[in-house]
Length: 408
Image 1 (cartoon, rainbow, N blue to C red):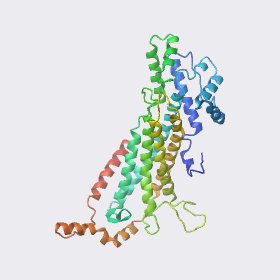
Image 2: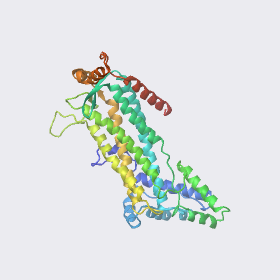
Image 3: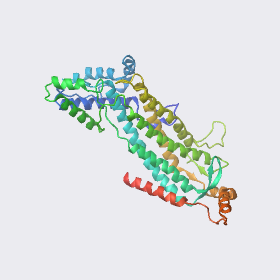
């Protein structure tokens, strides 16, 4: 895909596209039908993959206007095109929300895996930066002004902490399936099991749910039609990533200003130029990362708003707002992950400029030290005034190396 409104969208590939959603919905329906057949409820199964082409999705979308979602139109096509006694059993016992929610979980699982892989690479890049510059003195800045000395290694360790926290948030996600039927009771499936002669209809359907869920590699839980914590948790974890990336991009954009010149983005042909000013070298990667960081929280807030208004046993509109919101959040996070990885791999650290700036501002940077000496009645020491910087950096590096080892 490409998107003029979101430069770099192609880096998300096929994540959460209409075609991938079609494939995911087919996987959910297939897992359920196969489980029904294995339990002896459906007489047979049929193969659904490929029965509906991505080229047909515009027609499916038009039909979805009449039902509020694409599943009824897809089910009609699958039943009409499949051959064999199992064709009529497609979707039996399910409801549209089961298929949509579970398929969205599958799409988001793919996005989470891709982002986690990028985060791991970013941890490696930041470990190298922090370790290489643990002694590189830089002016610490607070509220835009010079504060006290610090090291670029510790600054990179701060970035690293944000990345590790984000990776932890993504790694904690437990992604569930959704199989509940019309109102979360799976009553239709239980009735079908009874009519088909099951000795224990409820137990049989519980086995079908476990079977289909296992096939999809998801977590078995009771139906969660109007308990939307699954999607708010995923959204929040992705926003934790864009927060961490945005913080890095903000620092890089600031420190790459010509009057500061302490960092520079990796150079690439055609990147950072201006349509009229040939001297420009804009920090485009940082700009695009900040774009994602600025828009992601609003997407997550939409998920929380939808969760708060998901009433009865099926949300009336709140549920529908999640689909494009989750798509945009997943794709934008994947694109920002790509840009951040590229930024960190090629980030240029101007350590001489850092040192020169710190030296020129040294009296201001050590004003706090003189104030402490005056208060305590002693003389200021003559060292870099870095306090616990190296110890803090070592703690972060130990955590990062443990993470890299655990995710090897």
